Image 1 (cartoon, helix red, strand yellow):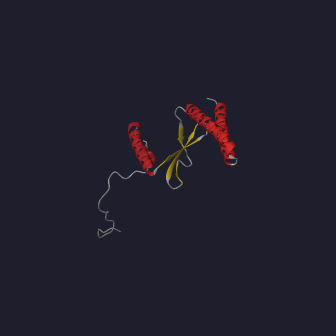
Image 2: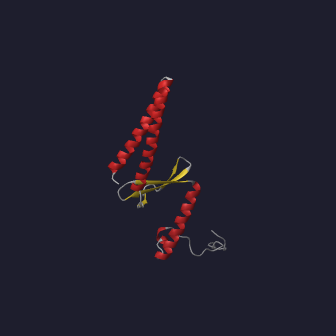
Image 3: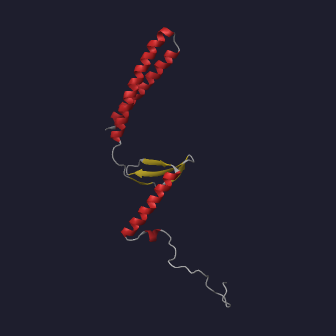
Length: 154
């Protein structure tokens, strides 16, 4: 599907929608005898616009079929969107930007899944997360060590 075809399908839909709106506006401003004919013409254009809308949707689905291969945006991989959603951002190899908006619950589920997969991948891949993340000591003492002469903490 080439961009020119998508543009022409979108233009046909826009033209049909515009014609329907124009005929409705004309029908609202004329006498009753002409109103019937203009309303009928507006209904015909609405039906045409509905068919063209479905054709446009089908063309867009066809053009966008297949996976998007993208990497997380290095500058701002996640952000708040209108204080109600979390937006995850990525960039394709061609420089296009992809935004996925999640509810707070979806964002928590996504983050939890990513952490789980990262840990599993790290374990299977030889443990590289330890080099990236600051780790806690493997052993901790429950009592502070004495450092003064009388055995009390300094």
